[in-house]
Length: 158
Image (cartoon, rainbow, N blue to C red):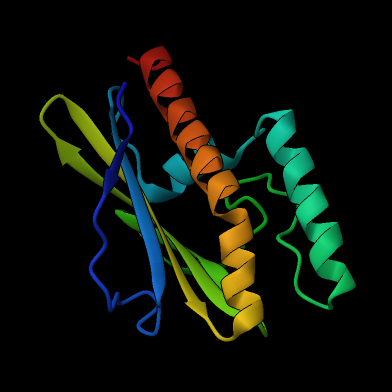
């Protein structure tokens, strides 16, 4: 299973004012899944180290009066659903320092399906820029780990 970085074209319909973005893709085999079903696989029961990092993040941002990200479990990982269709689910919320969206796209490809996770961020101020600078290495590791779960799940349903 290969997880690839992909380009993101800005502006993006899910967050037109985004000024930071990344996108990761992978292919997987097995039964055809909707974007919501893929989100369930990605977010259900994340590894403990990811849960701990999110708890730490929520504690730190709470000190500054910013929103927490929920519990990172369940179909949407604790993130509110902004929009949803069979091939795409958009999660995210707006806060004082930044607005963000997680766009999960699923499409058919030869031999299976492709899933892509696009993260879009509209950094409002210096706090938003510093936040993204600090979390980007963790963000990349988390997204790649979550997509790795999808490949493992796909191999169990073929």
